[in-house]
Length: 431
Image 1 (cartoon, rainbow, N blue to C red):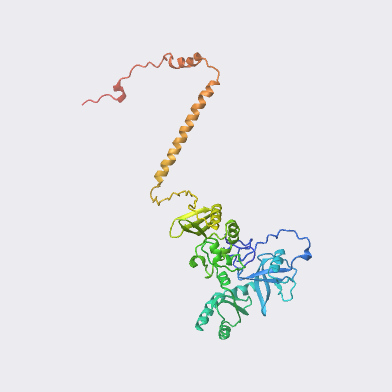
Image 2 (image 1 turned 90 degrees about the vertical axis):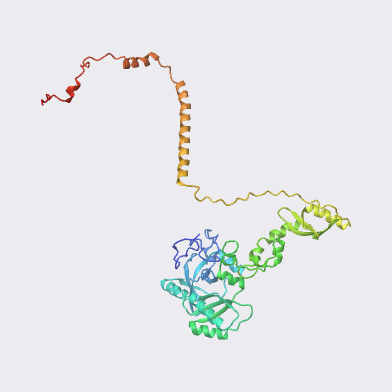
């Protein structure tokens, strides 16, 4: 997912948090799917650029008054509070116009700030220097707020690139008196102080983290519209009302409970209404669950523990009989055949596979291949012999007779030598 280096001029690269070419270095990234579309009229192009700050934690819109064309991922210097700030271009072109329309922001507003220039080396050095102060400022500000016994939680500190202003993001349930706190902050940091309250879900988005699904939080990656979530959404989806499991890291109900809610509501339209109870001769049957995948409704007779899965058609028939004052004797539940999954027990295979076993297996495979090759060669030999012309047997025997019936060679019949002569020609010595 990440990239080790960055070739787009970003400070410190993307730190392996995403691909620089796709813009995944930022949180709340938006894919520009119109970037390669030809522009019919260059004069009608959107002159507003979306700029993100603090790795996508905050976004704002600035008018491009320069003649420079900015690409996604480029660092720009924009107007700030009594100075300038440095941000990253996160979106350009026609998609910015759609975002402005969605957020009810006028493209030609007078109050919209401007882009000053592409960030130079001096701007980036000052930007990195002031960004390095944010972590220490957050720790110090929390200590000061705790010393004043203020019921608030500081989430993030953002210092302007020129070092003239600091914005403190916090969450609080009630109103907080900041008169004494701002004086202490101004004396400690020597900056212009701005306190900005955010919601609990927005606070969790700024902090980030990993959800129970194993992925990064939706609020810190792409979700920017926080809708209200109630326990009714969990009931429609047949989820157990467990506050611990249904709550996210922010302490509120998970936003993902609304993702599939519309699908469940559409599927539940086929189920009959006012079918929470059915009258039977054995007692009253109470609805406990609706299965939209199998189109079944599960009932349990009052005072019993056995579950009865009924089809939608059967429930409607029983309901019509109950309206006539007739109690059914048999619910006629559906017989469900459950396939039992084989449970694989734990097997300790440490030491079972050794090099010797692997060598034996490879040797067996080699022997098997050799035997198969021999069989193929034996099958090919008779087929080749059938196609050859018959050979004369006498011709084959002649060289054999010449080879084994050779006449004896003359000159080789030497007399046997005396064995004593092999010892040498020296005369025997007398004693």
